[in-house]
Length: 151
Image (cartoon, rainbow, N blue to C red; front, top):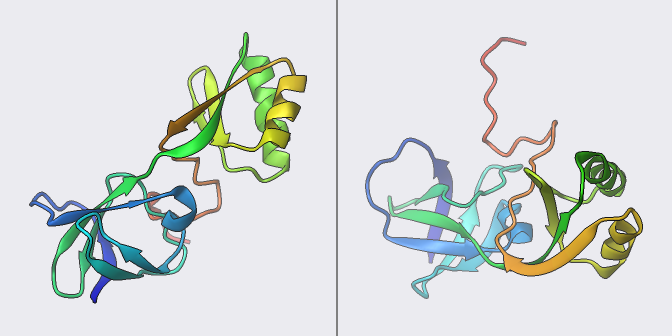
């Protein structure tokens, strides 16, 4: 079985296959997976790594694999103004809901209870199948934030 042991940056070569996962599985550092070519593999990554669409991984034997975000059932929220969207972000954040924030909209994994709450604020909720890439959070290390100063 292929052992995927590291996320790599700055690689410009080709990759041998891809790995498509939903967001909840892209947060796990230890996981048995099936690559998109049908091969079995195990993720053995550093704890706390969150994989993002387009990330590249390397196996113990040197194979390079591209990460893809799978389509998931999401709720997309739109409203007439940024004040209402900000209120929705506040209330969803209070419930520790992972959010993908865009210009003029926000997105979370579909949940009918949350949809009802957001509608009660005067916003419109649509459902779609889309890839989900939420904010990483101010204190979460997903490997996309690098300190350039000493502590």
